[in-house]
Amino acid sequence: MPDMLVKLYNLENNWSFIQEQEKLGITIRKPIGPERHYVIEWVRQAFGEVWASEVDMAFSSWPITCFIALKSKELIGFACYDATGLGFFGPFGVAESHRRKGTGRALLLACLLEMRMKSYGYAIIGWTDLTDYYHKTVGAEVIPDSTPSVWKDMLKSQDAHA
Image 1 (cartoon, rainbow, N blue to C red):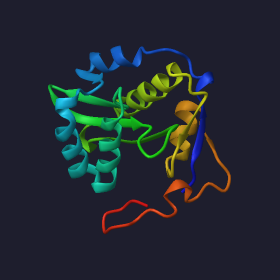
Image 2 (cartoon, rainbow, N blue to C red):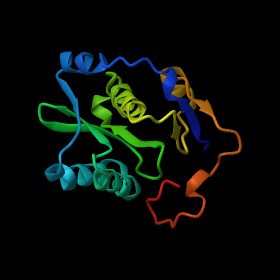
Image 3 (cartoon, rainbow, N blue to C red):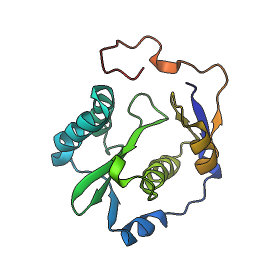
Image 4 (cartoon, helix red, strand yellow):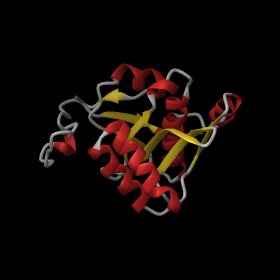
């Protein structure tokens, strides 16, 4: 699976997706430190150990490089950046029962726009099979010869996604 490149300077600085999600009863926000273990465990259960490790890295940054989505105080999604490497978006995911409501898009945009505000010019979306989604949503382009990217020498276990 290839990496993709997003030109952050081409993204419109429009945060209206926050209000769009609020109309659906979904809150997009940054987590706080005391929520660290809860978020990591939720990701571990929903998406596996590798992504949980990356979320742990996002919580190790200051400020935290992660956003979460809540519905009625229930965690339903997350997105991170600068977790695997600086300038990388991901991982991100939304609970299956809450997909197709724009929450994944909102989490993606929250991370990318925050990266833009921090003066990143580009973001790398690492090792993805969602190339059509990212191209349509944020104009991402496949980086030629980028497979397997920074994960090429990663230690693997039974549930590793790499």
